[in-house]
Amino acid sequence: MILSRIFRHPIKAHGREELASVLLSEGACLPFDRHWAVAHEAAKLTEGWNRCANFSRGAKAPALMAITCRLDESSRTITLHHPNRPDLTFRPDDDPARFQDWVRPLMPEDRAQSARIVSAGRGMTDSEFPSVSILSLSSLADLSAKMGTDLSIHRWRGNLWLDGLEPWAEWDMIGQEIVIGDAVLRIEERITRCRATMANPETGQIDADTLKGLSDHFGHRDFGVYATVIRGGRIAV
Image (tube, rainbow, N blue to C red):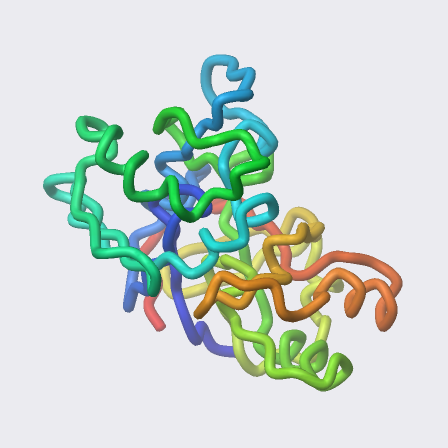
């Protein structure tokens, strides 16, 4: 088993960034993963972590799935890229108006529009606990074969991609601890998927019914697992 790819998503649902290595901390998300999130105009936020229904996301706005990004950690400046928009470089903490103008054409008119960028002091992951998502390239290859289409890893917006496992062996790892580099992670639970995975991450257009594929062939809509960092340390592909 090897660690094949590492990704983070500094603004929840608004761009992915690949890393060669990263330092994990005990009890924390991958650094700067979902550090910010975009609350929509109908959001009902409480202090701290909030559920994904309060945020603009690919399940409701598939065009967002085609965003890639680059984060400068020292200045907390992000550059966003999208095939249908000019590049945007901005600071989420200080310059939300320019971001709102940039993202508006990517949002369906019949959905709640993006209103403001928020942060919570922890990653705004879909799990109530600070998590790192772990996914298997073997499981993705099996699902792709059964669906008859080559599914991109970017549909799943995972943090760590493992290679060399038997397909779906990650289900048997729940409750166990795994060592990756200098870190130790405990596998906690499956990740249940949403409509965001149906969008092509190159175009932002829905083109594959991943939820039906999972349901028809496996009887559920789960892909990947959430893990907790129980010993921090550096990991690298």
